[in-house]
Length: 173
Image (cartoon, rainbow, N blue to C red; front, side, top):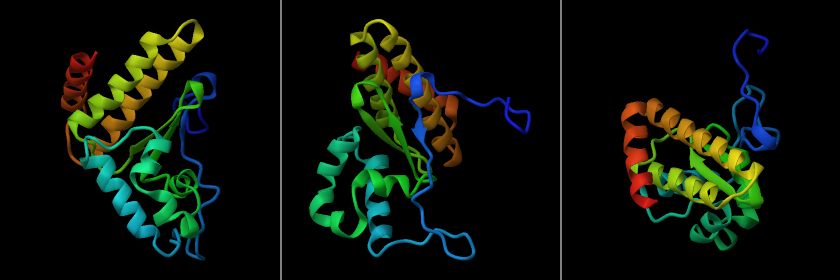
C-alpha cells in the first residue's frame, strides 16, 4: 500500500513504463521549459504514434522513422532522452531482451494501433520460455492499461477500446 492507502503497482522483474522526470527542466513556477524545436518534435511524435498505423512500436525503429538523427539529435539529444523529458505525453515500456516500446499517454491510439501493441506483446510471450512468459504477460496487461487510460482521457470507452484491441490482436495471432 502507498502512503495514501492506495495500491502501489510493483513492476515484475524491474520492467515498467518510465515516468522519470529527472531530466526535465522547469522554470521557477514549476512549468516544463522546452528546448528550441522540442514542441515540433512532441507534436510530430504524438501525431505518428496516435494516427499512423504503420509507425513502428519500438523506440529504435521510431527514431529511424522520425529521422531523429538528422532532424533533432543535435538540438534535443537522443530520442529516448527526449521522450523521458515528456513523461505526461509518452510512456516508455522497457521489455525483456532489451526491447523498448513507446506509447502515447495523452492522445488516444487508434483501435488498430492498440491491437498492434497487444499483438506485439502476445507474439513475444508465445515465443518466450520460463520466467520470461510471466514478464511478457505482465507487460501485455500493462500496455492494455496504458492504452485504455490514454483513450479514456480522450473520451473513448476503455472497455470498447480493449474489446476492439483484443479482436485485432486475436486476428493478428
